[in-house]
Length: 95
Image 1: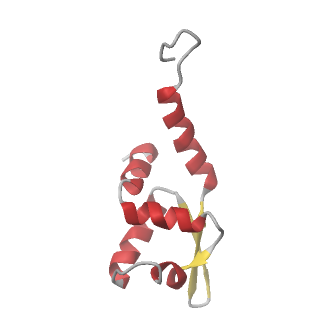
Image 2: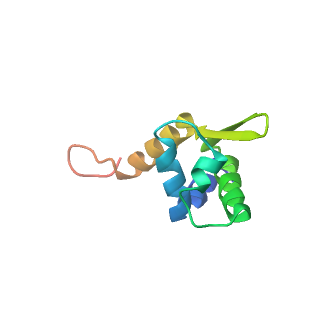
């Protein structure tokens, strides 16, 4: 699956979109993110894995703690691609 398809698969789920929204405020630990959801740890891990596979989030380990953050470069690329789909020229035609 290419990067764009992986990103769209990742953001198709409301829980994953909420994780991305939460990470807009800065890095958070897996535990801090999990506290925001009524889900099992394996389900949260799955969501983190899908987001990481799509390269939408970064993760780093400090001892026993995993920190997650937004990969803003990939998000910007996806948003730019989406905007290109909707951009029209001055005569109202799609570019």
